[in-house]
Image (tube, rainbow, N blue to C red; front, top):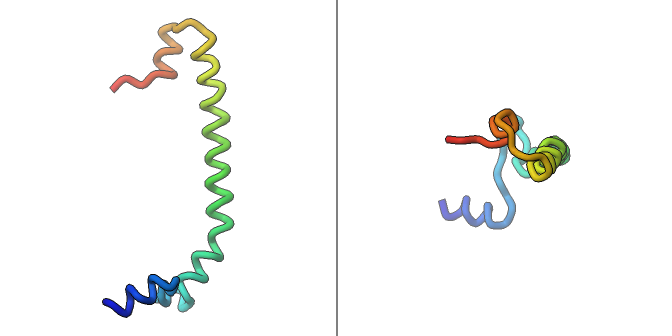
Amino acid sequence: MEHYLWQLGHGDLGQSFKFQAPVRQIIFERYPATLQLAFLALRVCAAIAIPAGMLAAVKPPTALLERVLVQDD
């Protein structure tokens, strides 16, 4: 266990059984796609949330608007 933690502390994540490659290499190969997906999700959320917030700030509350924008638990 101590040897594993020592290697982990130095960036050695070991060997993947499934891909037969270093885990660190696999992570870095997939990192760009992960960043693209994260930024796309951020843009989609902002595209919905910003107009909804502006609408909620400007328009007086109505029953329909309250049901769409406000979640009551």
